[in-house]
Image (cartoon, rainbow, N blue to C red; front, top):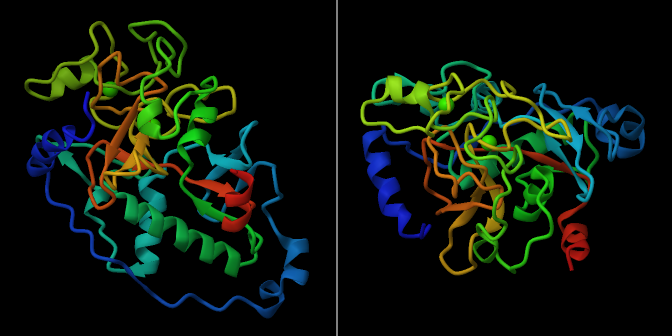
Length: 305
Ligand SMILES: [Ca+2]
Ligand SMILES: [Ca+2]
């Protein structure tokens, strides 16, 4: 499917949904941490995020290492409860995305469901806020920060072999017959949350994967299906996940990975499948996942050369 062309289809979906205004959030001043936690030399002894090891942050988000990358991956898609903490601490953050409906049916109905319809820029603002919050509290080092995974980090996390192509667009769907659960089609039961019989029973005109029923018409609470080899949940399905990278370096769109509760195609569900949206566009099947990096942007740039 031509991703750029597919924007027109997305716009139709977005018209059906309530519009998601995306005002630039203005941030409330953060509390000044105690002096003992502001000084790196003192704080390092109290740092709770050991580099390269699993970490649970101040919002209860759990991070695990992924061999072959230099980052820790959140085991969950960013939840409604995580977004609510961000929105409570900052003025002007859109909170309508915490309670979406689709064709009159609640979508992310609960604090452990993924936040969705968040655009790329909003996801960036969340990561920047969380970085400042935890650095100020002495929970992570000054060199550590939260961000979105890169396209290739996401590929490593989902277990893809080496991919050819410079841009995500060039890598799109190039690895055939590899899904997050293996090579079987249709997916085995409980492979993940995709368009299925449950959706068909709730949404008029909906078509799910033939013979597949995961039990969730819309989103599922994060972690409802089995984790992968690294302990990460829902890389396949539930919500598409924004990545840092541009899709093709020309369109201005950014890449998303993993398919969602609205997807059923044996092509779109491939581990190597990519989707793309402009950074100011929210979509009812798109959320995000954070990673924690221990390298400064300069170090990351140097290491990727
Ligand atoms: Ca489903
Ligand atoms: Ca996902």
